[in-house]
Length: 223
Image 1 (cartoon, rainbow, N blue to C red):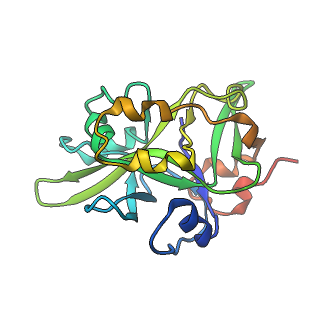
Image 2 (image 1 turned 90 degrees about the vertical axis):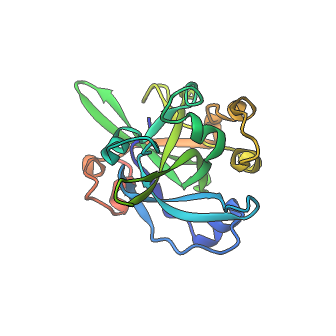
Image 3 (image 1 turned 135 degrees about the horizontal axis):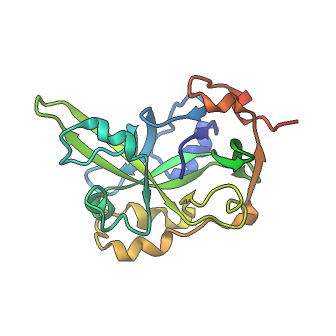
Protein backbone atom coordinates (compact mmCIF):
# COMPACT_ATOMS: atom_id res chain seq x y z
CA UNK A 1 0.00 0.00 0.00
CA UNK A 2 1.00 3.64 0.13
CA UNK A 3 0.04 5.35 3.37
CA UNK A 4 2.56 8.20 3.57
CA UNK A 5 4.63 10.11 1.03
CA UNK A 6 6.66 13.28 0.47
CA UNK A 7 6.67 16.18 -1.95
CA UNK A 8 9.43 18.74 -1.65
CA UNK A 9 10.58 19.14 -5.24
CA UNK A 10 11.03 22.69 -6.62
CA UNK A 11 7.82 24.11 -8.07
CA UNK A 12 9.47 24.71 -11.46
CA UNK A 13 10.46 21.04 -11.67
CA UNK A 14 6.88 19.98 -10.95
CA UNK A 15 5.49 22.35 -13.58
CA UNK A 16 7.88 20.94 -16.18
CA UNK A 17 7.28 17.30 -15.26
CA UNK A 18 3.49 17.63 -15.20
CA UNK A 19 3.17 20.09 -18.11
CA UNK A 20 1.25 22.60 -16.02
CA UNK A 21 0.19 25.94 -17.54
CA UNK A 22 1.18 27.73 -14.32
CA UNK A 23 3.93 27.09 -11.80
CA UNK A 24 2.39 25.92 -8.51
CA UNK A 25 3.33 27.30 -5.12
CA UNK A 26 3.59 24.35 -2.72
CA UNK A 27 5.19 24.10 0.68
CA UNK A 28 7.63 21.17 1.11
CA UNK A 29 5.91 18.18 2.71
CA UNK A 30 7.81 15.39 4.48
CA UNK A 31 5.01 13.25 5.88
CA UNK A 32 1.82 13.51 3.84
CA UNK A 33 -0.87 11.40 5.51
CA UNK A 34 -4.36 10.11 4.64
CA UNK A 35 -7.34 12.47 4.96
CA UNK A 36 -5.10 15.50 4.37
CA UNK A 37 -5.45 17.80 1.34
CA UNK A 38 -2.98 16.71 -1.35
CA UNK A 39 -2.04 18.19 -4.75
CA UNK A 40 -3.59 16.40 -7.70
CA UNK A 41 -3.19 17.03 -11.42
CA UNK A 42 -6.14 16.42 -13.73
CA UNK A 43 -7.56 17.78 -16.97
CA UNK A 44 -9.74 20.86 -16.79
CA UNK A 45 -13.38 20.41 -17.95
CA UNK A 46 -12.49 21.37 -21.53
CA UNK A 47 -10.24 18.31 -21.54
CA UNK A 48 -7.05 19.86 -22.90
CA UNK A 49 -5.30 21.88 -20.18
CA UNK A 50 -4.00 20.34 -16.96
CA UNK A 51 -4.78 21.86 -13.57
CA UNK A 52 -3.41 21.29 -10.10
CA UNK A 53 -5.97 21.19 -7.30
CA UNK A 54 -5.93 20.20 -3.64
CA UNK A 55 -8.11 17.14 -2.99
CA UNK A 56 -8.92 15.10 0.11
CA UNK A 57 -6.73 11.95 0.25
CA UNK A 58 -9.17 9.07 0.68
CA UNK A 59 -11.68 8.60 -2.13
CA UNK A 60 -15.33 9.13 -1.22
CA UNK A 61 -17.61 7.39 -3.76
CA UNK A 62 -20.31 9.67 -5.16
CA UNK A 63 -22.97 7.31 -3.81
CA UNK A 64 -21.60 7.13 -0.27
CA UNK A 65 -23.87 8.38 2.51
CA UNK A 66 -20.95 8.92 4.89
CA UNK A 67 -17.84 10.86 3.80
CA UNK A 68 -15.88 9.11 6.55
CA UNK A 69 -15.80 6.14 4.17
CA UNK A 70 -12.91 7.88 2.40
CA UNK A 71 -10.52 7.06 5.25
CA UNK A 72 -10.63 3.42 4.09
CA UNK A 73 -10.11 4.34 0.43
CA UNK A 74 -6.61 5.85 0.38
CA UNK A 75 -5.44 3.11 -2.00
CA UNK A 76 -7.09 1.10 -4.77
CA UNK A 77 -5.76 -2.17 -6.16
CA UNK A 78 -4.98 -1.54 -9.82
CA UNK A 79 -5.88 -5.12 -10.76
CA UNK A 80 -9.51 -4.74 -9.64
CA UNK A 81 -10.23 -0.98 -9.62
CA UNK A 82 -12.14 -1.20 -12.92
CA UNK A 83 -14.58 -3.67 -11.32
CA UNK A 84 -15.05 -2.31 -7.78
CA UNK A 85 -18.16 -0.12 -7.28
CA UNK A 86 -16.14 2.47 -5.37
CA UNK A 87 -13.61 2.99 -8.17
CA UNK A 88 -14.95 1.74 -11.51
CA UNK A 89 -16.53 5.03 -12.67
CA UNK A 90 -13.45 7.02 -11.70
CA UNK A 91 -11.28 4.46 -13.48
CA UNK A 92 -13.16 5.24 -16.69
CA UNK A 93 -13.66 8.98 -16.36
CA UNK A 94 -11.66 10.56 -13.52
CA UNK A 95 -8.02 9.54 -13.59
CA UNK A 96 -5.37 11.86 -12.19
CA UNK A 97 -1.69 12.27 -11.36
CA UNK A 98 -0.57 12.61 -7.75
CA UNK A 99 2.91 14.20 -7.63
CA UNK A 100 5.49 12.98 -5.11
CA UNK A 101 9.24 12.69 -4.67
CA UNK A 102 9.29 9.78 -2.24
CA UNK A 103 7.13 7.47 -0.16
CA UNK A 104 7.31 5.30 2.94
CA UNK A 105 6.70 1.62 3.55
CA UNK A 106 6.77 -0.26 6.86
CA UNK A 107 8.56 -3.62 6.97
CA UNK A 108 7.56 -6.15 9.62
CA UNK A 109 10.73 -7.28 11.41
CA UNK A 110 11.06 -9.06 14.77
CA UNK A 111 7.58 -8.17 15.89
CA UNK A 112 7.77 -4.50 14.95
CA UNK A 113 7.41 -2.33 11.89
CA UNK A 114 10.51 -0.63 10.50
CA UNK A 115 9.78 2.39 8.28
CA UNK A 116 11.70 2.80 5.03
CA UNK A 117 11.88 5.79 2.70
CA UNK A 118 11.87 5.15 -1.05
CA UNK A 119 12.82 7.75 -3.67
CA UNK A 120 14.33 7.98 -7.14
CA UNK A 121 18.10 7.72 -7.27
CA UNK A 122 18.33 11.16 -8.89
CA UNK A 123 15.89 12.64 -6.32
CA UNK A 124 13.60 13.76 -9.14
CA UNK A 125 9.85 14.09 -8.63
CA UNK A 126 7.43 11.60 -10.16
CA UNK A 127 3.68 10.94 -10.23
CA UNK A 128 1.52 8.19 -8.80
CA UNK A 129 -1.45 6.93 -10.82
CA UNK A 130 -4.54 8.24 -9.05
CA UNK A 131 -8.31 8.39 -9.30
CA UNK A 132 -10.52 11.24 -8.13
CA UNK A 133 -14.19 11.56 -7.27
CA UNK A 134 -16.83 14.26 -6.64
CA UNK A 135 -19.11 13.82 -3.62
CA UNK A 136 -22.07 15.97 -2.64
CA UNK A 137 -23.71 15.78 0.77
CA UNK A 138 -27.44 16.12 1.48
CA UNK A 139 -27.01 19.75 2.53
CA UNK A 140 -24.92 20.75 -0.47
CA UNK A 141 -21.45 20.12 0.94
CA UNK A 142 -18.98 19.15 -1.78
CA UNK A 143 -15.81 17.11 -1.28
CA UNK A 144 -13.42 16.19 -4.09
CA UNK A 145 -11.21 13.28 -3.10
CA UNK A 146 -8.59 10.95 -4.51
CA UNK A 147 -6.91 7.58 -4.11
CA UNK A 148 -3.52 6.14 -5.12
CA UNK A 149 -3.45 2.99 -7.21
CA UNK A 150 -1.18 0.16 -6.09
CA UNK A 151 0.35 -2.85 -7.80
CA UNK A 152 2.60 -5.80 -7.02
CA UNK A 153 6.05 -4.83 -5.67
CA UNK A 154 9.21 -4.73 -7.73
CA UNK A 155 12.42 -6.45 -6.59
CA UNK A 156 13.41 -3.52 -4.38
CA UNK A 157 10.09 -3.26 -2.56
CA UNK A 158 9.28 -6.96 -2.27
CA UNK A 159 11.26 -7.48 0.97
CA UNK A 160 9.46 -4.49 2.50
CA UNK A 161 5.82 -4.92 1.50
CA UNK A 162 3.55 -6.95 -0.76
CA UNK A 163 2.23 -3.83 -2.57
CA UNK A 164 3.70 -0.64 -3.99
CA UNK A 165 2.17 2.52 -5.47
CA UNK A 166 1.92 2.73 -9.25
CA UNK A 167 4.53 5.22 -10.50
CA UNK A 168 3.70 6.26 -14.03
CA UNK A 169 6.23 7.00 -16.76
CA UNK A 170 6.00 10.65 -17.94
CA UNK A 171 5.39 9.38 -21.47
CA UNK A 172 2.18 7.77 -20.19
CA UNK A 173 0.73 10.84 -18.45
CA UNK A 174 -1.29 12.04 -21.43
CA UNK A 175 -2.98 8.68 -21.99
CA UNK A 176 -3.69 8.24 -18.29
CA UNK A 177 -5.36 11.66 -18.03
CA UNK A 178 -7.32 11.44 -21.28
CA UNK A 179 -11.00 11.35 -20.26
CA UNK A 180 -11.93 10.37 -23.80
CA UNK A 181 -10.29 7.01 -23.10
CA UNK A 182 -13.11 5.48 -21.06
CA UNK A 183 -12.18 1.86 -21.69
CA UNK A 184 -10.16 0.86 -18.64
CA UNK A 185 -8.48 -1.95 -20.54
CA UNK A 186 -6.58 0.65 -22.60
CA UNK A 187 -4.83 2.10 -19.55
CA UNK A 188 -4.46 -1.14 -17.59
CA UNK A 189 -1.01 -1.89 -19.11
CA UNK A 190 0.31 1.34 -17.55
CA UNK A 191 -0.35 0.02 -14.04
CA UNK A 192 2.80 -2.02 -13.61
CA UNK A 193 5.61 -2.14 -11.03
CA UNK A 194 8.17 0.60 -11.49
CA UNK A 195 11.68 -0.40 -12.57
CA UNK A 196 13.68 -1.10 -9.39
CA UNK A 197 17.02 0.19 -10.69
CA UNK A 198 15.70 3.77 -10.69
CA UNK A 199 14.72 3.66 -7.00
CA UNK A 200 16.61 3.57 -3.72
CA UNK A 201 15.31 2.64 -0.26
CA UNK A 202 16.73 3.21 3.21
CA UNK A 203 15.42 2.69 6.75
CA UNK A 204 14.36 5.77 8.70
CA UNK A 205 13.50 6.42 12.31
CA UNK A 206 10.09 6.07 13.91
CA UNK A 207 9.77 9.87 13.92
CA UNK A 208 7.77 9.42 10.72
CA UNK A 209 5.22 7.19 12.43
CA UNK A 210 3.27 10.18 13.74
CA UNK A 211 1.60 12.30 11.06
CA UNK A 212 2.08 15.26 13.40
CA UNK A 213 5.79 15.15 12.59
CA UNK A 214 6.32 17.12 9.40
CA UNK A 215 10.01 17.92 8.95
CA UNK A 216 13.12 16.67 7.08
CA UNK A 217 13.99 14.36 9.97
CA UNK A 218 11.27 12.00 8.67
CA UNK A 219 13.41 11.08 5.64
CA UNK A 220 16.83 10.95 7.29
CA UNK A 221 18.55 7.54 7.05
CA UNK A 222 19.17 5.63 10.25
CA UNK A 223 22.80 5.66 11.39
